[in-house]
Image (cartoon, rainbow, N blue to C red; front, side, top):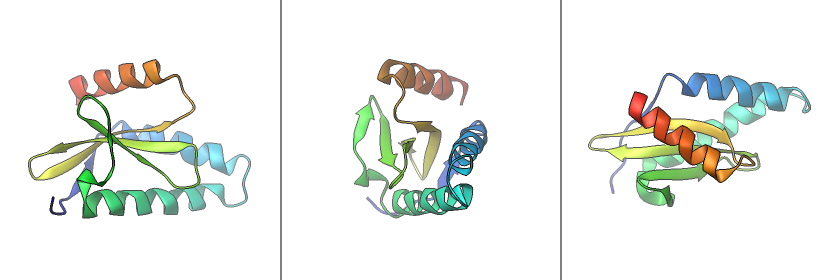
Length: 106
């Protein structure tokens, strides 16, 4: 598949604030380091959205390197939509439920 732009649901900003605060709380310049790794993951998704595996229904997951977090996204015609940035240590059932809620509200 060719590259295509990446967009984010509004609620993803809340996810990012949580992740940055988590890393800032215990790591020197943790928020900045997390943000750089997040940008790298988004760049890979933009370059080739099909690069990462489908994890649940049409949701794909890109793990943010060297963190506990992953991006969940869907591929739409002409755009890739990031639905959530979540701590992957959560219960998988809770993650699936959250993804379903967000895509319906989306």
